Structures are given as structure tokens and as C-alpha cells.
Amino acid sequence: MDNELLERSLQISDEIGLDISIVERIGVIDGSSNLLYLIRFNGKPAVLKIFRDDGNTKIAREKSLSEILSKIGIKTPHLYYDSVGDISFIVEEYLDGNCPTDKKSLILRSADCANLHVRTIGQIYGRLESYTDDERMVIMREMLKTLHLTNIPRRLISLIESQVFLVENFPFCCTFYDFVPSNSKTKSSDSSLYYFDFERARVTIPFFDPACLVLYRKEDIETICGSYHKTISYSVGPYGQLSYTDVKRYTMGAAVEKCIEILSFFQGDNHIDQSVREDVVEKYRTNLLFLLDRIDKDANYNVKVDRKNE
Image (cartoon, rainbow, N blue to C red; front, side, top):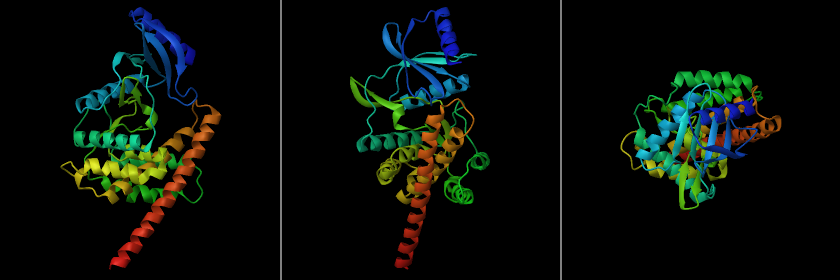
């Protein structure tokens, strides 16, 4: 199937006169929803991304968020070409730098996503879908049915309803939604972070982006939420009125929701290699239990503090 997609994409490229030659396959070969190749495009290194499914919608998201980010000063790789139809693919700039994951870079990523949120709050972007809170609740309940987590589902439902959905009166904003550190790199000529892979971008509540960073490095929850809160605190409107405690609570709730979503997907019947699936499931089960325990401890601590101050 993958070979057929590649062959058909190259055939389309030839028909429209694109100068493409494959160098090697890159990315997470057994776990990605797309096919990624390092190529030569007009004699220069570039990336060919072929979408396995729903390519037209994903390309629309890629282009929409890229345009939005460029307007607010957040860097993205240059999009050279996009092809929509039965076979959908894009050709974009190759970033030849690295993917920093130190604490300083986490702070920068958290500030960048916060900047995106406050700059797009309450705005409507036709090519970025949104879920209502009721739709998300239904989706979460269905996902929970696919998970076999002893004595946890009722607790999770309560958490989602009481913590994540407390923000239902807040206006939505544009989000990366899949805001993992590996979706940003530098250039050899520029140490700035360039963001990419926006196929899951959507309009929703903001906390899923910092939640992705928390799931990447949960020991830095305070650092990530602190940077996010500092950035939004300068804004006018409901996001700027959030306290650090609010940001942390909502982010941890969103991280729980992301865990459920990821676990449901990887435990489902899909093309992903079995060993990759098992590793991811184990990782996010561990993350989920950690978050629930941390939320409980924070809640208990807050109760003790309140009583002490009475």
C-alpha cells in the first residue's frame, strides 16, 4: 500500500513537471499516519509528505495554520507545493538543524503556543474544525469504552466533566493540537524554532497544546505551565484573567484527555506495528496514572492549605 502511494505520488509529480528524486524514507516509519521522505526538489533538500487518508482536509489544516503562524511571527518551513485529490501530498522545506528538548526550549514552545492562542482567541477559521464540549464528551466516553483500565473510567469521566469542561464558557482559539517537541526544529543557519506538521490543528480550548508538552516531560509541569501563564497574563480578555493554578489544573485535565485519545487510537485496529503500539500504550497508561495521582495530590494539598487559612 505504501509503495503504491509513493509510486502514484511520483507519477503525479512527473505529470505536472515537478523535479523530485527520493533520497530516503524518514520519520517514524511504523507509527506515523503519513509517509515522509527526504527528497531532492529542484536540486535542493526537501521533504515529501504523503497522506495515507483524508489528505485534502489535512492539507487544508496545514496551510491554514501555517498562514496564521506567519502573520504572528512564528516561523514555519516554506511550503513549495501541495497536491490534493485521490492522492494528496505536500513538498516543503527541509529543516537541517536539530530538535532541542532542553528546559529552555520547552519554555519557548510553551510561550509560542500561548502567543498563538491569545492572538486567535474568538476568531473563526473556516478550514480548522472545532468540537463542541458536548461532542468532545461523547467522543471521550466512546474512547473510554475501548480502554480496559480497572476502577478508573468513572473517575476519568468525573475529571473531564469537572476540570476540562470548566472552560466551556471561554472562547475557542487556534491550536496546534499535536504540539509534540518533535514537530519543531531549527536550521543550521537559524537557531529559531520552526514549527510543522499541522494536520491535526483545530479550533478548540487552548490547553491541549501545553498538555502535549507536559506529556512529553511531566517532571517539568510547573516550568511549562509557568511559561504559558506568563505569556497569556499580558493579554486582554478571559485568558489573561486565568491564574497560574487555573492554567495548571486545566492543562493537567487536558493532558488526561490527550492520554485517553492516544490510548484509544493505538489500541484500535490500525496499520501501526505491534511493537510500536505496545510501547506507546505502556507509556501513556503510565502517564495517565501519574496525572491522576498528581491531580489528587494537588487537590488534597489545596484543601489542606484552605483549611489552614480559615
